[in-house]
Image (cartoon, rainbow, N blue to C red; front, side):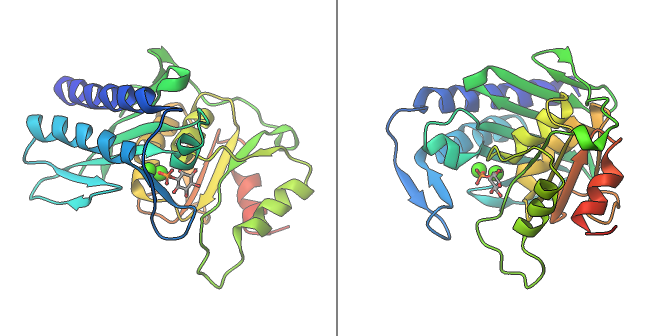
Length: 259
Ligand code: IPD
Ligand code: CA
Ligand code: CA
Protein backbone atom coordinates (compact mmCIF):
# COMPACT_ATOMS: atom_id res chain seq x y z
CA UNK A 1 0.00 0.00 0.00
CA UNK A 2 2.90 2.38 0.75
CA UNK A 3 4.08 2.09 -2.87
CA UNK A 4 0.54 2.77 -4.21
CA UNK A 5 0.36 5.81 -1.94
CA UNK A 6 3.74 7.09 -3.12
CA UNK A 7 2.71 6.82 -6.78
CA UNK A 8 -0.69 8.39 -6.12
CA UNK A 9 0.87 11.38 -4.37
CA UNK A 10 3.59 11.77 -6.96
CA UNK A 11 0.99 11.88 -9.78
CA UNK A 12 -1.31 14.20 -7.82
CA UNK A 13 1.47 16.68 -7.02
CA UNK A 14 2.82 16.63 -10.57
CA UNK A 15 -0.65 17.40 -11.96
CA UNK A 16 -1.08 20.13 -9.33
CA UNK A 17 2.19 21.72 -10.43
CA UNK A 18 0.97 21.83 -14.03
CA UNK A 19 -2.42 23.29 -13.06
CA UNK A 20 -0.79 25.99 -10.96
CA UNK A 21 1.76 26.84 -13.64
CA UNK A 22 -0.97 27.63 -16.19
CA UNK A 23 -3.51 29.13 -13.77
CA UNK A 24 -4.61 32.61 -14.93
CA UNK A 25 -2.19 32.29 -17.86
CA UNK A 26 -3.02 31.63 -21.49
CA UNK A 27 -4.00 28.23 -22.84
CA UNK A 28 -6.18 26.77 -25.51
CA UNK A 29 -9.84 26.06 -24.60
CA UNK A 30 -12.21 23.79 -26.52
CA UNK A 31 -15.86 22.87 -26.11
CA UNK A 32 -16.92 19.27 -25.53
CA UNK A 33 -20.68 18.59 -25.88
CA UNK A 34 -22.48 21.89 -25.43
CA UNK A 35 -20.90 25.34 -25.37
CA UNK A 36 -20.09 25.42 -21.65
CA UNK A 37 -18.63 21.97 -21.17
CA UNK A 38 -14.98 22.90 -21.59
CA UNK A 39 -11.68 21.13 -21.90
CA UNK A 40 -8.38 23.02 -21.94
CA UNK A 41 -4.94 21.99 -23.12
CA UNK A 42 -4.02 21.96 -19.42
CA UNK A 43 -6.56 19.19 -18.71
CA UNK A 44 -4.78 17.09 -21.34
CA UNK A 45 -1.31 18.03 -20.13
CA UNK A 46 -2.25 17.19 -16.52
CA UNK A 47 -3.85 13.91 -17.62
CA UNK A 48 -0.78 12.84 -19.61
CA UNK A 49 1.54 13.53 -16.68
CA UNK A 50 -0.66 11.46 -14.33
CA UNK A 51 -1.04 8.54 -16.73
CA UNK A 52 2.70 8.48 -17.51
CA UNK A 53 3.51 8.15 -13.80
CA UNK A 54 0.93 5.40 -13.23
CA UNK A 55 1.90 3.51 -16.40
CA UNK A 56 5.60 3.65 -15.51
CA UNK A 57 4.90 2.07 -12.11
CA UNK A 58 1.87 -0.13 -12.85
CA UNK A 59 1.66 -0.89 -16.57
CA UNK A 60 -0.74 -3.78 -15.85
CA UNK A 61 -3.38 -1.66 -14.03
CA UNK A 62 -6.60 -0.34 -15.59
CA UNK A 63 -7.22 3.39 -15.91
CA UNK A 64 -10.38 5.44 -16.33
CA UNK A 65 -9.63 9.08 -17.03
CA UNK A 66 -12.03 11.80 -18.11
CA UNK A 67 -10.43 12.97 -21.35
CA UNK A 68 -8.92 9.73 -22.70
CA UNK A 69 -11.67 7.44 -21.41
CA UNK A 70 -11.19 3.83 -20.36
CA UNK A 71 -7.90 1.95 -20.70
CA UNK A 72 -9.04 -1.37 -19.33
CA UNK A 73 -6.77 -4.34 -18.66
CA UNK A 74 -7.08 -7.70 -16.93
CA UNK A 75 -6.47 -6.21 -13.51
CA UNK A 76 -8.38 -5.82 -10.27
CA UNK A 77 -6.76 -2.41 -9.80
CA UNK A 78 -8.27 0.66 -11.44
CA UNK A 79 -7.05 4.25 -11.26
CA UNK A 80 -9.89 6.78 -11.66
CA UNK A 81 -8.64 10.20 -12.75
CA UNK A 82 -10.03 13.68 -13.19
CA UNK A 83 -7.06 15.73 -14.45
CA UNK A 84 -8.85 18.99 -13.60
CA UNK A 85 -12.13 19.01 -11.72
CA UNK A 86 -13.67 22.45 -12.05
CA UNK A 87 -12.42 23.18 -15.56
CA UNK A 88 -14.90 26.04 -16.05
CA UNK A 89 -13.50 27.69 -12.91
CA UNK A 90 -9.96 27.03 -14.11
CA UNK A 91 -10.69 28.55 -17.54
CA UNK A 92 -12.05 31.68 -15.83
CA UNK A 93 -9.17 32.04 -13.38
CA UNK A 94 -11.31 31.04 -10.38
CA UNK A 95 -9.10 29.20 -7.88
CA UNK A 96 -11.64 26.46 -7.07
CA UNK A 97 -10.37 23.55 -9.11
CA UNK A 98 -8.23 20.51 -8.44
CA UNK A 99 -6.86 17.22 -9.60
CA UNK A 100 -8.64 14.14 -8.29
CA UNK A 101 -7.29 10.57 -8.35
CA UNK A 102 -8.73 7.43 -6.75
CA UNK A 103 -7.39 3.89 -6.69
CA UNK A 104 -9.96 1.09 -6.66
CA UNK A 105 -9.32 -2.63 -6.03
CA UNK A 106 -12.28 -4.72 -7.24
CA UNK A 107 -15.28 -2.88 -5.76
CA UNK A 108 -13.37 -1.14 -2.97
CA UNK A 109 -11.67 2.26 -3.03
CA UNK A 110 -8.26 2.00 -1.41
CA UNK A 111 -6.83 5.49 -1.81
CA UNK A 112 -7.98 8.94 -2.85
CA UNK A 113 -6.28 12.31 -3.30
CA UNK A 114 -7.73 15.70 -4.25
CA UNK A 115 -5.32 18.60 -4.64
CA UNK A 116 -6.14 22.27 -5.17
CA UNK A 117 -2.70 23.84 -5.68
CA UNK A 118 -4.05 27.40 -5.77
CA UNK A 119 -5.24 27.04 -2.18
CA UNK A 120 -2.40 24.72 -1.25
CA UNK A 121 -4.88 22.09 -0.05
CA UNK A 122 -4.11 18.41 -0.47
CA UNK A 123 -6.85 16.07 0.75
CA UNK A 124 -5.95 12.41 1.11
CA UNK A 125 -7.58 9.25 2.44
CA UNK A 126 -6.60 5.63 2.78
CA UNK A 127 -9.23 2.94 3.41
CA UNK A 128 -9.51 2.34 7.15
CA UNK A 129 -6.82 4.91 8.01
CA UNK A 130 -8.71 8.22 8.08
CA UNK A 131 -8.79 11.36 5.97
CA UNK A 132 -6.29 14.21 5.97
CA UNK A 133 -5.90 17.78 4.79
CA UNK A 134 -2.22 18.63 4.37
CA UNK A 135 -1.33 15.71 6.68
CA UNK A 136 -3.69 16.80 9.48
CA UNK A 137 -6.63 14.49 10.28
CA UNK A 138 -10.05 15.85 9.25
CA UNK A 139 -13.60 15.05 10.34
CA UNK A 140 -17.05 15.93 9.06
CA UNK A 141 -18.99 18.57 11.02
CA UNK A 142 -20.92 17.61 14.13
CA UNK A 143 -23.98 19.73 13.30
CA UNK A 144 -27.25 18.00 14.04
CA UNK A 145 -29.62 20.93 13.52
CA UNK A 146 -30.61 20.73 9.86
CA UNK A 147 -32.11 24.23 9.97
CA UNK A 148 -28.56 25.56 10.53
CA UNK A 149 -26.83 23.45 7.91
CA UNK A 150 -24.64 24.94 5.18
CA UNK A 151 -24.92 23.00 1.93
CA UNK A 152 -23.40 22.77 -1.53
CA UNK A 153 -24.62 21.39 -4.84
CA UNK A 154 -23.95 21.48 -8.57
CA UNK A 155 -25.94 21.21 -11.78
CA UNK A 156 -25.50 19.17 -14.95
CA UNK A 157 -24.94 21.12 -18.19
CA UNK A 158 -27.71 19.16 -19.84
CA UNK A 159 -30.77 17.50 -18.36
CA UNK A 160 -32.10 15.02 -20.89
CA UNK A 161 -34.25 13.19 -18.35
CA UNK A 162 -37.96 13.75 -18.28
CA UNK A 163 -37.88 13.58 -14.46
CA UNK A 164 -37.85 16.63 -12.19
CA UNK A 165 -35.08 19.10 -13.07
CA UNK A 166 -32.41 19.47 -10.33
CA UNK A 167 -33.20 23.19 -10.09
CA UNK A 168 -36.56 22.24 -8.51
CA UNK A 169 -34.75 20.34 -5.77
CA UNK A 170 -32.44 23.32 -5.25
CA UNK A 171 -35.54 25.51 -4.96
CA UNK A 172 -36.90 23.38 -2.10
CA UNK A 173 -33.68 23.83 -0.10
CA UNK A 174 -33.70 27.60 -0.75
CA UNK A 175 -37.37 27.88 0.22
CA UNK A 176 -36.48 26.08 3.45
CA UNK A 177 -34.18 29.06 4.13
CA UNK A 178 -30.94 27.09 3.91
CA UNK A 179 -27.70 28.53 2.53
CA UNK A 180 -26.75 26.47 -0.54
CA UNK A 181 -23.47 27.19 -2.35
CA UNK A 182 -22.41 26.15 -5.85
CA UNK A 183 -18.63 25.93 -6.16
CA UNK A 184 -18.24 24.20 -9.55
CA UNK A 185 -16.00 21.32 -8.51
CA UNK A 186 -17.66 18.17 -7.21
CA UNK A 187 -14.37 16.78 -5.88
CA UNK A 188 -13.81 19.93 -3.81
CA UNK A 189 -17.47 19.92 -2.69
CA UNK A 190 -16.95 16.40 -1.28
CA UNK A 191 -13.68 17.33 0.42
CA UNK A 192 -15.24 20.41 1.97
CA UNK A 193 -17.94 18.16 3.46
CA UNK A 194 -15.16 15.89 4.72
CA UNK A 195 -13.39 18.72 6.54
CA UNK A 196 -16.61 20.20 7.98
CA UNK A 197 -16.89 23.42 5.93
CA UNK A 198 -20.15 22.09 4.50
CA UNK A 199 -22.62 19.83 6.25
CA UNK A 200 -23.98 18.25 3.07
CA UNK A 201 -23.60 17.99 -0.71
CA UNK A 202 -25.85 16.55 -3.40
CA UNK A 203 -25.66 16.39 -7.16
CA UNK A 204 -27.14 14.47 -10.11
CA UNK A 205 -25.26 12.89 -13.01
CA UNK A 206 -21.69 13.00 -11.77
CA UNK A 207 -19.09 10.70 -13.28
CA UNK A 208 -16.80 8.24 -11.53
CA UNK A 209 -13.77 10.55 -11.97
CA UNK A 210 -15.61 13.43 -10.22
CA UNK A 211 -16.34 11.39 -7.11
CA UNK A 212 -13.92 8.47 -6.69
CA UNK A 213 -11.35 10.17 -4.45
CA UNK A 214 -13.85 12.44 -2.67
CA UNK A 215 -16.10 9.49 -1.86
CA UNK A 216 -13.35 7.76 0.14
CA UNK A 217 -12.27 11.06 1.73
CA UNK A 218 -15.85 11.70 2.99
CA UNK A 219 -16.18 8.14 4.29
CA UNK A 220 -12.84 8.19 6.05
CA UNK A 221 -13.71 11.57 7.61
CA UNK A 222 -16.75 9.91 9.24
CA UNK A 223 -19.37 11.10 6.73
CA UNK A 224 -22.16 9.21 5.02
CA UNK A 225 -22.55 8.87 1.26
CA UNK A 226 -25.51 7.25 -0.52
CA UNK A 227 -27.71 7.56 -3.58
CA UNK A 228 -31.03 9.45 -3.33
CA UNK A 229 -32.79 6.34 -2.02
CA UNK A 230 -30.38 6.25 0.90
CA UNK A 231 -28.80 3.07 -0.50
CA UNK A 232 -25.08 2.23 -0.48
CA UNK A 233 -23.13 4.32 -2.98
CA UNK A 234 -21.02 3.30 -5.93
CA UNK A 235 -18.79 5.71 -7.86
CA UNK A 236 -20.82 4.80 -10.95
CA UNK A 237 -24.11 6.01 -9.38
CA UNK A 238 -25.88 8.96 -10.98
CA UNK A 239 -27.10 10.35 -7.66
CA UNK A 240 -24.68 11.52 -4.97
CA UNK A 241 -25.58 12.58 -1.44
CA UNK A 242 -22.72 13.12 1.01
CA UNK A 243 -23.28 14.50 4.50
CA UNK A 244 -21.95 14.58 8.04
CA UNK A 245 -24.42 11.71 8.71
CA UNK A 246 -26.63 13.69 11.12
CA UNK A 247 -28.54 15.62 8.45
CA UNK A 248 -28.65 12.80 5.87
CA UNK A 249 -32.29 11.85 6.39
CA UNK A 250 -33.39 15.52 6.31
CA UNK A 251 -31.62 16.00 3.01
CA UNK A 252 -33.10 12.79 1.57
CA UNK A 253 -36.56 14.01 2.58
CA UNK A 254 -36.18 17.30 0.67
CA UNK A 255 -34.50 15.70 -2.36
CA UNK A 256 -37.34 13.16 -2.62
CA UNK A 257 -39.95 15.83 -1.76
CA UNK A 258 -41.40 13.82 1.12
CA UNK A 259 -43.11 15.59 4.01
C1 IPD B 1 -17.55 19.18 -13.34
C2 IPD B 1 -17.50 19.68 -11.91
C3 IPD B 1 -18.80 20.37 -11.56
C4 IPD B 1 -20.01 19.45 -11.78
C5 IPD B 1 -20.01 18.93 -13.22
C6 IPD B 1 -18.69 18.23 -13.53
P1 IPD B 1 -15.28 19.09 -14.77
O1 IPD B 1 -16.34 18.50 -13.66
O2 IPD B 1 -17.26 18.65 -10.99
O3 IPD B 1 -18.83 20.75 -10.19
O4 IPD B 1 -21.18 20.19 -11.54
O5 IPD B 1 -21.07 18.03 -13.37
O6 IPD B 1 -18.71 17.78 -14.87
O7 IPD B 1 -15.97 19.04 -16.08
O8 IPD B 1 -14.91 20.44 -14.34
O9 IPD B 1 -14.19 18.06 -14.65
CA1 CA C 1 -15.00 16.59 -13.11
CA1 CA D 1 -12.37 17.32 -15.58
